[in-house]
Length: 132
Length: 477
Image (tube, rainbow over the protein chains, first blue to last red):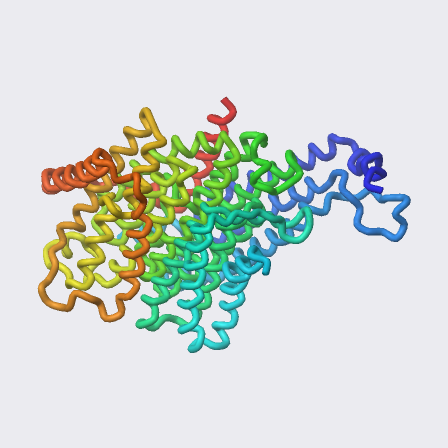
């Protein structure tokens, strides 16, 4: 039964291969945008948003990686296996999404705390006040 | 009875679930928690003694791969001992009610990292340890604590995003997340994985979140940070290095550099807790220079450093100069002196053995640099050796039972025959005394001040990116 999956036309063959490459470049660009924001922006909230953009880019890359031949989930009719995406990256990335979300919310809460103490969210100024 | 299942329940599930129960029954849990840590450390010690080794995949062929082997057990043993000491030290002080549950969960998470052999599972557990560490650092709710905690979480999460990218590369090339499949993955994957972990593990400039976090957090939390959270980043590196020759080569060259870099910072530091934190940066380098022996070194260092941080919390001041002038009470003096001697490599302790083993595997410039770093370690710990004891006060602390547990663990680690040849003991004592002599000679003349800018949040992240590109380039050549 497994062999019939192997002979199946790969799922992504239905679409031109260039599409996958273009999508990958776009997502890597998204990661790069997030990275540059994280490094360049001085405001902590902007940094956190940039970090989330970067995280989203990486998560979407996982979803893109799942776009290849995988084994179909259990179906009633096993004689005609369906072409399907690889379930493993999608299954694991759910955890990463949850972790990213929880870190984001924790950071936002404590950045609110910081703004009350330091009266600014500018990292340079906070560090100047810190070092004094 | 299925041993792996029992081990997973005791090491991981019980502390994690117990954290939730502690919220409901705080009083009873206070007494039971040290017992759990004691059971876990005894169990790990017993497993090392029996030479138990087993690897299995948790639920199904695509499940989480878990490995029980002696490097993992050494780290879980250290984990148990450090948490036992910290929970005993917390027993006579009041802490916010959330602290003990977090400590319990951190214990389970760290154990999960030490036994897991699956890149994605490591990612989840390391990130969870990061969140718990963040909550512990800001526990005192002082503004400076909150800022250093935020700095830690931002840099660590940034590192973990890079790690996630590396995981993806590994999966697309091998179709699995297992560490064992790392043998022939593209260099960029190894570069991304190592960069991500090095932020957590405190290597070179990527670990510069560490001094502020250690300096600001409560003493018990600092002990956990240096003892366990840094090792949570290191342990996966040792696993990766044992399967990927690229990573092995890189880490054994990076180790000596990290060691001497940390020594330079520690020599210039005037604050006791920050000096101990920089010392962690340098000791991490020692552990990395021989990745195969790394877990033993990391475990001995974790115990010794946790002891030093716990005793630093009992000091009247954090300025080393002040302490040298005024002296400290006998009951805090004795653990600090013994801890400093252990860190400087006194024969008879676990770190002496670990240092000897690490150096015996190295040659060429790596050995020279590591030897210099060991000399530097003796130099800056001499500052603590010069603190005089006050005559007043009793020799034993009122609730200092953990002193004996930690000392006993360090001595037990050092009780390995075969490493006590005359030349080994002599060279180690020579290092110790020449370090002390050099310190006495130069302490009035040299007063280095190192720049602060690498410790700023943008620079840590920028240097992390640079480091990633650099090792990718080195790998590609």
